[in-house]
Length: 557
Image (cartoon, rainbow, N blue to C red; front, side, top):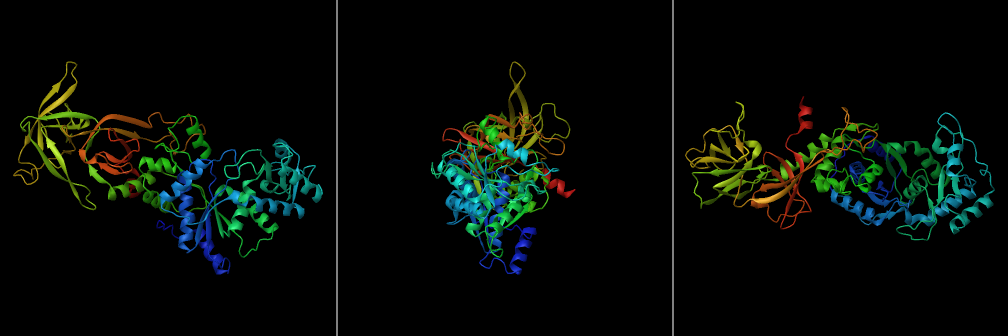
């Protein structure tokens, strides 16, 4: 399991207080309970780190439980993706993977027990009528005309619902609580509905399904969960969570306790599974793992690392109030991890040919280049008469403080020689096609002029051995206001420049046949990762993050 250092927070303080009062003598037990109706996003990563981290810190256990109570939106693709994401982040549930559907029989029995105690009834009102009868935030609800059905009638109707005698929406089972409660959730919430839909695990066995608010606390209790950590929107549902466990006589010293924390909101993106699903289904992105998506699979393909995401979750902490986190903070964590662990290579995204006129045509030499200053290592880089440099590293009419290549100017080639621009070659339309330069043959490492001071150093790639590569430059998927908030109409806010594809980049041959997922720092450009689209015939790289760290700089001010 990954090491987690979530630190002290109000949830840990609550756990400490519970233990001090003698509760949960069998140990702390948490759970991560995703609904398998989409791929996990960065907000789920925070919940994963928190739940598994709390279990680890308290020498307890953390379950993975799929809350699969809505078969109309769930399937095994989402189950598999969720398992992969959790494991990729570095966490393990051991042999404790469960489904709410494992407990459908028990949940049904609990529902009958509520009916027998006079705490649940079958209602014939339509969904629209139930909403109308529920009242508003300022006006109490009014009771359904079916609220006082006898226990025997309710049991009979509920069993007939289970047997499939009624159509979808014809009847529901509701908890009988308080239609005048100031908390709208407590105004006789629906706990079972009819849905003649096959379930991805139970098939056609059931045509009634429990609602999430009913299944979740009871699944927690069945599994022996001690602390049910939820996001803040479930705070209003906590009274029903407690009412249900009280009504079914679960021991207050061992039954689960719900605690809410603020969900993760990031600038320049959305963390709503519904909105992300819309982006996928309407074709605005290539899929759930599109590198522009804030899904864990998208971040993995983009090149974000598990260690960086865990570090980010640790840095933002656990709060009680919602806030907006700068996306640059996540990029900072990714950049810090890759700076330490990614090998350096040279690449040219916008190639311009340079001919070294005083370098022998038939000569090729191999120069030593360091892989990573943080952990050492070196490689050999081929050098020859014709090389590629980046078009942005040359200006014909350069300002005084332009320290890259210009007519009559000198620049150092990284790991190689100092060169001087002697002639600019253009085509008939006046476009620059190549540069003719001369080499100072004594300026490479160990040469007589190796220490000569030159202000500019640029990357390069030898033409003879350069590999062709497609490079994908990703930017934020959504445009935001000055505060980083995404407009309500998020589709209209899609950034048309969120992806730039460079089809003819050049890169040094050391990366040939590198596996997908391998990270590199392209010198002076940024951090990149080999994309799964790479084949032996075609290299494809995604830009992970650039070299500039705006968040780190902002913290120093």
